[in-house]
Length: 469
Image 1 (spheres, rainbow, N blue to C red):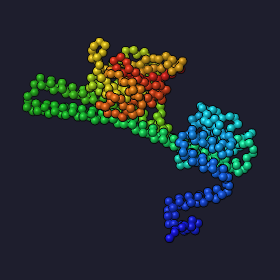
Image 2 (cartoon, helix red, strand yellow):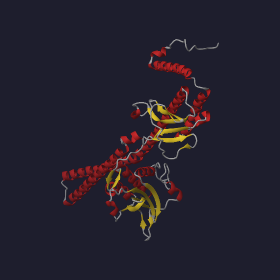
Image 3 (cartoon, rainbow, N blue to C red):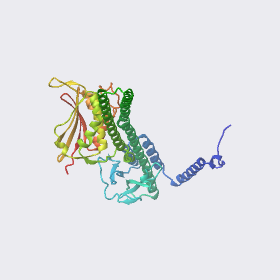
Image 4 (spheres, rainbow, N blue to C red):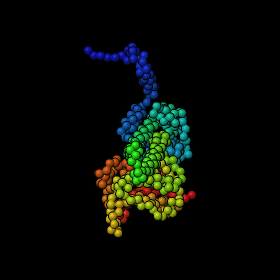
């Protein structure tokens, strides 16, 4: 038995009384309206083929650049006309000439010619017809853009003869489809960037906040041990008092031990405060609302003295860990370049040094220096580089040196790439993200990060421009 449905006469199902049912009814109504509209459009076979080809190729090619090419090339192949695509630059809000169907994609930013006016209505110029590219506001549109339809640019089509009303109507519909697809592609690209940023941010939080925060547990255990020692001494003092066996020697011993414990507790308390303040700084710099709204790290820069406000506080955080590994901290003797304050993001640049110092704890190795003595050390410093970036723009090179064997050429080339872990990293935990974070932050400051093999060890550095104005 063959089943069939009469789509015009079937009764409304019970689902229609629900919210989902009402939504389905709305969609069915719109389908019926579109069916009627397409009958009135009266597109020619060629015009229908243009739309089908455009949609098929727009799905086949994923990049924005190829989408621009498709938008104009399909008109030339089917209609034999010249077409040019002009779009509003999202960063500068300037209308630019992007692509045509003769030479293809334009190189660099090319300002639209004077006869191309950004407006929401079609208009004719000598030998051409200009159509607005508009996208309807949808649920995926960012909230900041939902005040009205989005005017994305203009499509210019050379017209050797006056276009009929039907041809104008078709070009308007074609431009609308460009606008719809273009807007969706941009939103998709933005969402992909946001997701990538969030994934990296999660790694930054784990690497720079969660893992270092585990150090609190170690500090708490040390304080607990000291508290138990004080408790034991208290019991001894009570026992001695009760048995009347107190003598000057034992009293002096107890007083000295209590004093030492007291000082230790004060030191641990101060260290915990510093660690807490440091974690708070990192949390603030990683969890800014701007980062999530923009989809990338956003600098909050202010003038500071890098050594005093960034390097030394971070070095203080790692001093005990360096000492535990037998690593000597060698401090610079020339402080002249520190007199130049730099405009930087203190929180993010502090994490740059935290990453360098964290790696130094793991990878610094003992060597025999040029005097024949063992040396296991970390050193930091800086070097002024006049006119480094260009004439009139100098740089300051910030160095973190560690003793040990040089990285091989392959590791040295890839050390700042995402997920890379060197051949000497097998014994140490890590994600390979720390130095990628360093490079990203430095480049956001207009600088560059690098590595160089030096006498007796390895130098990890970054260079920041100096605002000499």
